[in-house]
Image (cartoon, rainbow, N blue to C red):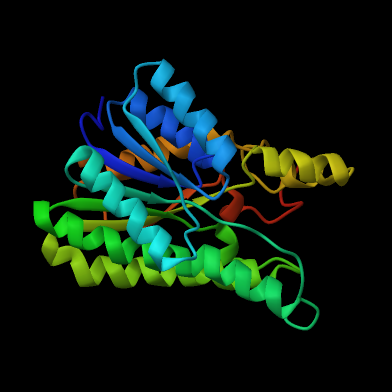
Length: 258
């Protein structure tokens, strides 16, 4: 129960890492406000959690819109009295280089993945200041450090998240607000499963890119986020925490077994 009685916002909570985190955090005693642009899926997760006796509230939120981000934070405070933590997790991907990406795709990826983190933090931090304590965890990616082919917008956005986290950690450490990011591997989410189904052979390649030779489950990433949001991580800030099964340490084909 390391999150007992904490009020935490989770963005991208309708599926994948966000949904797994909402489920885990409530099991650990937190009151969770779930934010997602997918209204129907978000309501279903809310119903699922409340049926289990969890304290959970869904707020339809497009994190790329500042008014939506503010409304989400305001809902958390009005519903539960304060805000202790933010798991800023919502994100999207797109393929393309800087030459062949559409301008619309480029802008949308940056708006959700980077601006969304900015907006959610912008409105969460003043509420955390009121209680003189808080924790923000952002979902970045190893690809924000180690570039891969044909995903220029995604890589730029995740690199920006890493830099933003460091900046916020310095700016608000004196307010006892910790800011960290996690770098997941190729997590088994519905989005990844759909990709693997449409790309034969991709799963074998992804497995080889992880030292543990498997892709992580969403719950495994959620556990890392839970630690960073908890008081057990009281002296951890400005950090990049790999939850990638060794992805950022592996050179493909480096293992003698391959």
